[in-house]
Amino acid sequence: MDHEGALTPRQEDIERILLSKADIASIVCRMGEELTKDYRDSNPLFIAILRGAVVFFADIIRAVQCPLQIDFMAVSSYGSAAKSSGVVRILKDLNTPIEGRDIVIVEDILDTGITLNYLIKNLESRGPRSIEIAAFLVKDVPGQRSAVLPRYVGAHVPDAFVVGYGLDYDERYRNLPYLGVLKPEVYS
Ligand code: IMP
Image 1 (cartoon, rainbow, N blue to C red):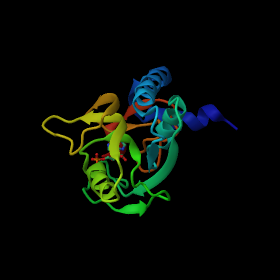
Image 2: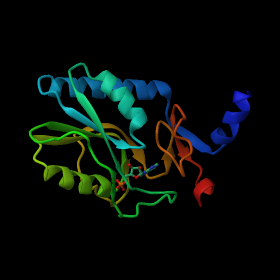
Image 3: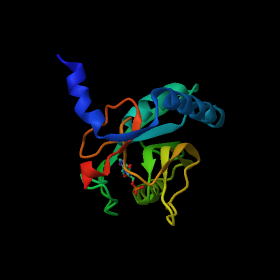
Image 4: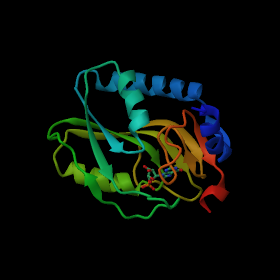
């Protein structure tokens, strides 16, 4: 199989690389240390928000050096449009009861925060002991204040559409090992 040929068209859609594999590895390592320090004795439940967070999730849980459990939720988000719709629906719920538990929501990118704000309200009604957010990325949009504040942040990115390391545009680019800015002509 011609791997070069299979990769080239996708890479041509990338305007520039924001975070290399090495950048990502050091971010994950630093966040893992912070989380280990804060959750050493509490057996937290780490919740991955499908699907974008799975790549980061797989890395971050292995960077945390204390006992933890995992579960998954899926909520509706962008679909194929590169803009936040504000419409949030739970597509897949947790299998684990969270009453009295320390929860860490693992998210790929926070933009408006609408998705997580909804999710946190929903989870709070189930009586957890605490809920914190670990966001790999926070998008800095001039004049926009996110509806939620993540305690753990990997990196801030500019107001552009980014893909790779789990993040998609129209279900593509999730498997790029780096984070890049998508060329606007791809989605306009
Ligand atoms: P929010 O509700 O506006 O914070 O949107 C959060 C969700 O939108 C993320 O979990 C992603 O699924 C998606 N999203 C936001 N910005 C981007 C981006 O630049 N690239 C890919 N997905 C994005």
